[in-house]
Each structure stands twice: as structure tokens, then as C-alpha cells.
Length: 120
Image (cartoon, rainbow, N blue to C red; front, side, top):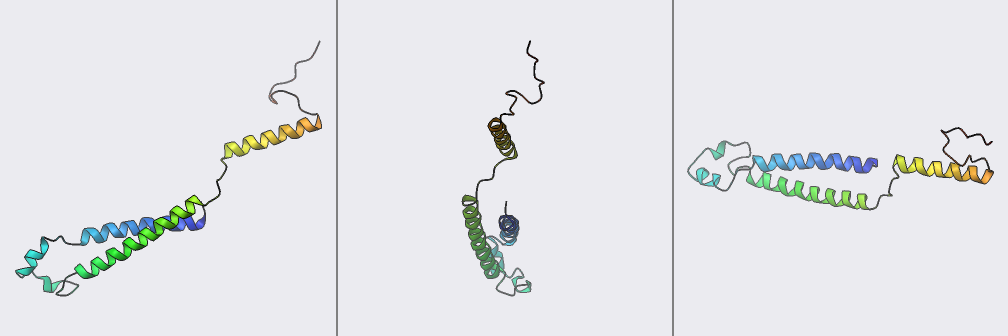
């Protein structure tokens, strides 16, 4: 995985955690009924209007960044060159060595771990 993909993947996790936190902090529609009867909404950190507008904008911003990041990760994953596994790479190297040995005429014709059986 390239450095860009790793960075975007870590960013994706942080964006997802931020979205979860912001969504859980928001109050539901039923909470507005209590605010109408003076439940202390004027003492909030965000002022008398409450935190709804700020949290809604932050949720929208994080959702857009999450979507763009997801599309970018998908594009990078689809357009990266396929990597060869170590097993396939080792098998290809062995095949190349055997082919080179056959061309030189030094191939034993069998497994390299077994000694040659003497001919009588």
C-alpha cells in the first residue's frame, strides 16, 4: 500500500470517528419541545439559538469530506498495479533458475534435495 493510501485510510478512520461523535452530540427533534418552555437553552455554549446550526454544518462538512475521501480511496485501489505475493515471486524465481540451468545443461532433472542415484 502506498503512503498516500495509508494516509487517506488513517484520515478516513478519524473522519468516521468525528462523524460518530458529532451525530451523537446532536439533540433529537423531541428536545425542541422542552426548549420552548425555557429549559435553559440560553445558557448553552453555542448561545440562545443552541448548537443545532453549528453541528448541522459540521456534520455536512464531515460527510462531504468522508464521501470524497471514500471515492479517492476507491479510485486509488482500482488503479494500483497488482502486487505479486512472495510465494508467486519465489515460484517465478525458481522457474527462471530451472530454465537457465536447462539452457546451460546443468539441470539434474530432479529435485535438488535428493542425491542422484548411481547408475549400474
